[in-house]
Image 1: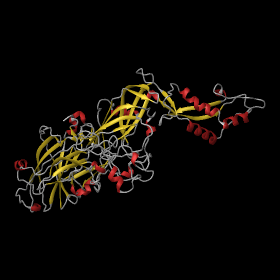
Image 2 (image 1 turned 90 degrees about the vertical axis):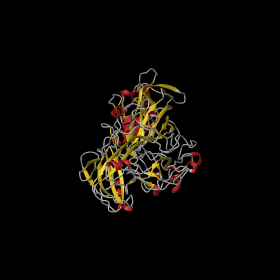
Image 3 (image 1 turned 120 degrees about the horizontal axis):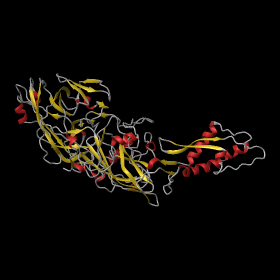
Image 4 (image 1 turned 30 degrees about the vertical axis):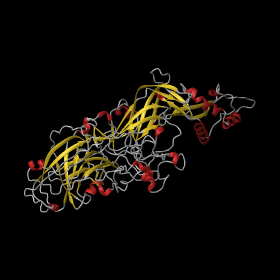
Amino acid sequence: MKLEKFLLATLAAGMFAACSSDEPTPGPGNEAMQGDGYVAVTINLPTTPASSRAANDDFNDGDAKEYQVNSGALLLFAGADEQSAVFKAAYPLSLPTPEPDVDNDNITTSYLTAVKVAKVETSENLYGLVMLNYTGVIQTIAADGSLNIYTEATGNDTEAFAGTFAQLVAKTSKRAFYNSAKDDFFMTNAPLSTVAGGTVGTPSIDNVTTLVSLTNSLKSTEEEAKAAPAGSFFVERAVAKATLSNEATEAVIGADKKKLGIVGQASWLLDNTEPTSFIVRNMGDGSYMGFANGNRGRRFAGTTVMGTTSIQPAENLFRTYWCIDPHYTVLAEGETLTTATEFDDNDFIAAGTATEKSAPLYCHENTFTTAAQDKRHTTRAIIKVAYSLNNDGQAQTFYTVNGVEEELYSTAAEAESYSLAFILNNDGIKAAIKGALAEGSSVAIDESNYADYLTITFARDENDGYRKVTAIKFKSNAAFETTPEWTAEQEAALIELTNGYYRIAEYTDGENFYDIRFKHFAGADYTDLNDLAPWNPASLTSPNTPSTAEAYPGADADNNWLGRYGMVRNNWYDVTISGFKHLGKPAPGSLDVSKDKTPDDEKETEQWIAFKVNILSWALRTQKHEF
């Protein structure tokens, strides 16, 4: 397995569990199963899918820390079926030294252990759920097997869990599922399908299971349990993984191909991340499992066998590649997702730099409906790059006017001259001056003498990076019979008019900001055969029609494009920047998307960054895009 391949981390861990009572009574439904027994648990930590672009089931290893297990627990449920099964008890797992990697592109490390199960009494089906590295999400597992779950992102508020598995799946958390101090990645069972996707099978939600059947699995001794493990548990990390690297050494800007050197290293962070996540991956109603875009196959289940079921006759298991998050549906008008990461320069220091497969960042999964597939809802990377205007290795502040990249100004005065000329030729300014002149006086105000009569103040808006007129005042001057005065409304109107005509971008220290939205199933373009949800704007009703329900109302939009964008837990999204073709924005605030309803698949008239995204094993997803 190649560690350096990963972008999207996918973790699958197989746990085999078997147990019996002191006086086992085998038979359908665990009749009379009571007393103490043992469950054998083999935990296999598989690789993450490392697909080339959007394709599923391309696996590879990640970083060693992503497979570290510091704590484990087995949760038992009993009931007629998975969703209605009721929580019985939780048992901490003592994990031995892992088995070595067999390099099978599915399992990376394995553990075999056994847990003593006290007084399991049920005539119903018995199911198991494994939680690894759970201490940041689950506060305690009490001696009696009860479970206390954290209810807030900070603080120590908890609640005891008692209910069905469906109720556990509905539980959300704002706590971090990755603890960087301990290198703890919270993991739970992965939902797996017994029917393959692609062009092989037709999966449905009825074929998807998360819990592992432990019915008729109790053994009377630990040795018996280990000798006959009954169930296979495949676990996944509860976060998505992103990495970014920059191959570009210079930017080639504008129609005249001006070359600007890149100073230092590009840096980046994750933005517009989902602040809340389900504790266990929530598949929702799963109505999407059979969706397919033309001949690209059914994309929501893989085709590589992950393992087999414990129920006889055994069935093959395949990974699933979608889910819902707590804000999955379209938000109300004007409502926006709370961004988990506040954007400022300090975050860049903390996030590291975008160099050769930089240190990964992790976040909650973020998925949304086709109708919500727009910039407001999509997690993205924001990249900061500093340019040298003279390509001499030294970053310089420079300016543009109205986005014209062919003319870069090295001083604010040069850029401001356009706004000044506009103001000095404004009819309102001229009328005010004429009305205030002493009888017989004649004054012609131009750029050479305006400072004698007017104070025009420019200032950089630190939020969006644009240099704007903030005040226009008349000075006292002997030429005036009385000093002209604006009303606040008049001044504000002139300032707004001026700033509307001239947009002066101030790139302080040469810093430019770009954003890249993470694609899940989308490829480089619709000709990419690995693109599982291809969108061809030329075939739609207009060149600018997005791949949303606005283009094709009803089920067609979902069949074709659900999941083009988004981030799913245990997937690795790897971005490689190959070039910069245009300037970015002068400050992060210019990239604000909190109210931006622009579809993710807009047909942009300008391309800003060339990059490709590789999703690695974890599940690797790669994407090509030009900004």
